[in-house]
Amino acid sequence: MTDAVQTEIKEIVEKNDVILFMKGTPIFPQCGFSSVVAGVLNHLGVEYSSVNVLENQDIREGVKAYSDWPTIPQLYVKGEFVGGCDIIKEMFEEGELRGFLEEKGVLKADA
Image (cartoon, rainbow, N blue to C red; front, side, top):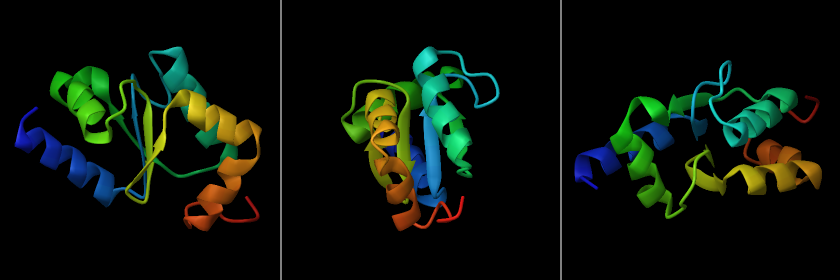
């Protein structure tokens, strides 16, 4: 993976409080796992940006190296890699995700 791709990913992660690298878009997810994570974020009312990895093969492969995580989607909050679909879904179901997002200041406690 080129340094330029890693730099681009780092800049995307750092400039967005909540960024979801996904297949498709939040309005039109193109895989079930991406759909689940976008759905959870939408349900919680989190404002987030997304990157459609299907539009850029370098980003698609580069984000896997960047996080050392083999799958898409990938969620970052305040520069921190949170996880993929299984982790986000489990955190949501266990009631941990809302608290985490509130603690990070990206979700209001009354949301």
